[in-house]
Length: 496
Image (cartoon, helix red, strand yellow):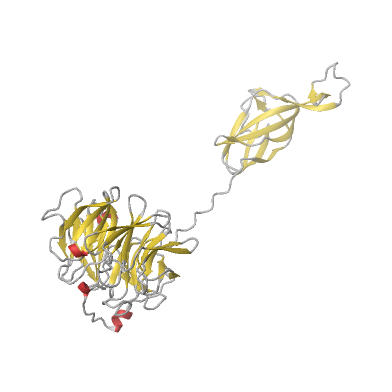
């Protein structure tokens, strides 16, 4: 957590004079549950100096605050995950100590400056503007109705910077003075929720932005005294989760104000975010007041929505001090490593399995059309398709899909060429080259077929008429789903 004096860690970090405490965790406890995981391996990416708060910008890049080094110059960093490119933009002046950062309703990035008592704004081109007089040590910041809302530790209040008028136009003081409001988020109920991290207070507050300040606005719910609530996040169903570094726990609160606390989180829990696996993920860094020293797990912890801790994932860089955490543009969780000058990335859910390959495109077709025998007598009466075996023939054919196949018959007759056409022999074309004509016999019949081999008994009758002796060919065209196959043909002969 950023403080008016000292390091500008994300809200809720135990680093200011208001948060001095003795950590009595044993080495065995620190080492417990630091289980590596291939499925949730951590990747690290070097960036600037002392990264703190982090968020995903409207440009799908990661934006984060950088407290800076010994020269006192602070920055706003930008990291593009697909390309790995990193740049940062200096904040004018020295000693600004930027803390948390969020996307405002105007599409710019807004951040708090603990040391300068200012609210800063940076556009996507890197132009920084500062607005002084925030109200004493601004720390957490979130987008909400009418602008961006932030906590002001020096005045124990929650305030709004109107992103249209560029003025602070709302202020809500906590019920207990000197409560050190820390992190802040917009709840699904439309209220602005925040943590009060002073050890003797340890409350969760909620501001109704549609009502004026009063003895019940903000509403406040009591957590365990000494729990020092820190980071806070809103999740599906309106449930809010928060870290409690004072008692090494994770807390949960409903919009009705009911608090549940789950001990065993690890040492110095700070930032918290919801993962795509439905669990909550939180940072475990250093405790104490001296930067980059003290006791801490140096890991990312995980707790299910039912309140069960699973394991912790140690950062590859020792003493990295994981701080703030947020979902990145790729769906993974990204976090800042204040003492390692790096960003970390952890995958919270296995990647979605690739979609199944599209089914092969089936081209509707008729194959292996044959008649056996190919010479037969036509039945004197009956339908085109018959069950009788004394007359007619067996027709066999194949289909690539379930279809209805329409059969027609063409009479094979002599002809003469007239140009490119084969016509009926006449005196006019008597000198033309001989050719074969196929004359359509009136009538047709259909057969419902399955995929693969099909057969039926053909009587030799078409259009309720018996085919006369002569040469013919059977033509088959299948239809299914509004599509038709190419015609398939087979010759046969009708005998007396």
